[in-house]
Image (cartoon, rainbow, N blue to C red; front, top):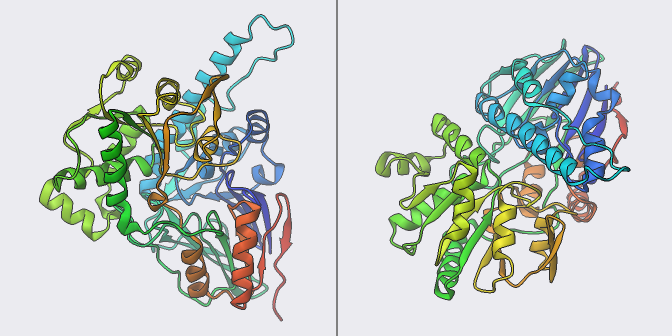
Length: 467
């Protein structure tokens, strides 16, 4: 039995793990790498041969850095099933198609911009919308806690990861040399007490090997209990200055959390009477999927649903689906709250809002999610004095507030507690984390008596059979 780490090894995006067993090989996730544009295009367009040649795929959740290259996998010759939860499949029906549209739009823009450059090589999307739709036909959905068999001799079970709607950990019972070994792949883990989502579960033991995310392995988040107070404080201060609050938010997960907290603040009379704009067609569609899956909600969200109705229909919310509706927000006079994608500010409608707002000190850029290295979002979060938007350098005069209480990822304390609860008898492999975060977490887990490794991309680990 072998594990091959094809992506998200000593980096955060592009999750992709190959598992080889006696009965066949399968992938866990096939995510899109996000970083420098040229490198991203190359890595996402040309998947490793080891990924294409598997018999099946298991998808932990619908975020693009875990699901975004599935159409490339299918187009490249993968002929197997893609196993995931029902909510994840429904989310992917929007996420993958939107990814294809964004790629086409970006390619069209850049090709027009460089049309007169004789050295310019035209950019093509790594997949189109038809290929995304064809990929959806490969999905086979399995609820939490129900066993399924991705390949002969392997029994898989999904457990709630508490990260986003439908997110799952994967417990794999694998026949190896006449005995059963248990491998758990955490996917992305959430935090206890987050809005909407249930808390992460702990798969039952005994567990032999744990492959665990480490995104925030070197830091602790703000207390979830402060989420409402922090958001109310930032909005109140910005409104007093006469400014606008711009929230670059992932269309999946973070947008719905922000809407729900704003709804609770408005119900409690703690939100100023300013317009709230949801400017992301994808976020609008994804929110409709959230409404279809109340079985994934935690108890407080279900109570809110019973008492107040739709958790995401905050009073004063205005929907901007069309391009004209989006551009019209730039003409709004006075304070407002604008929620727009993409979450890392690498594309989408948030860019024209940043261009319009970033140089005015009355405004606030509100960071509520992880920003990967080499992204505009990371440069904003680091409060760089100058940032490039659509190739034009602009001075950052707007206030930047980072509210890490909104993070949907487990922090260092959560990860330590999760690893201790899983208590793997063999090893922990850290993935989905930058080297600094992994080094800090590795030190802590090693001090707890666990054997910990942080594999590099492309590394294969032989899982030796016990006598």
